[in-house]
Image 1 (spheres, rainbow, N blue to C red):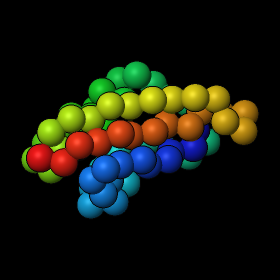
Image 2: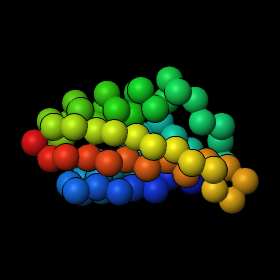
Image 3: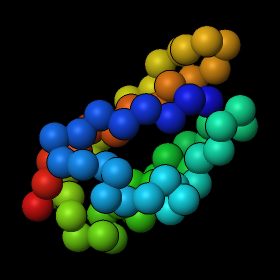
Length: 68
C-alpha cells in the first residue's frame, strides 16, 4: 500500500503516525474507518473522503479533505 495525500487542507497537520496504515502492508477497511475517525477527531476537517486505486502492485490511498 502506498499512502498519498491530496487535500484542500493540509493532511500533513495530522502526522502519519496517527494513521493506521503501514507501507507494504495489506489495506483493511477497518483501518480506513479508523483513519477517518482519527482525522475527524482533530476537529480540522469538515469533510473527509477516501479513494483507493491500484498502484505499483499495491494500493494507493488518497485522502480528500475540506477544512473546518
